[in-house]
Length: 195
Image (cartoon, rainbow, N blue to C red; front, side, top):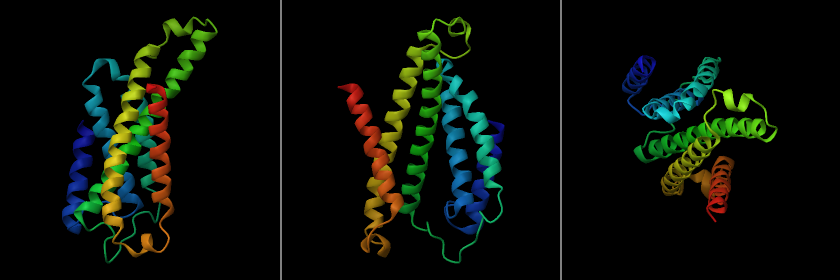
């Protein structure tokens, strides 16, 4: 929480100094994503049964912080790319969705580990610090639904904003198609599980 307060203060100060949403380059996007994952972890930490996800997010947050310090990630542009509110909201929602998908991937990895131990009757499945398999499944499904909803909102806002950009009219952007494919894949998996 203390780190999150300092992180948030730094992001707010950067946004005020540039007079725009601080998600304009790869450095700022990475820093924003770490802030979003940290906020989700603090929210999840309230629930005792889901605190295991917070422990798994720590090394990922550290790795993202180290990545953000790479040279040439923080390049300044005269004209900010994400200067409009709707485009900033689009970027924020998509990054939050990817954060939810990352947490779902971590809980899925723990699920597979626990399932393997149970399948082969290993005693460490009983004594493991990993939560029970049923709780892992519920956490993964809820995180995936959260990611799908956030990405749907982000894509809906993005298509409204992107229609006005010249790049999209002349053939589109690969990251837009990739985001739609990711969203459709997760939605198909969740609907298939529900059916």
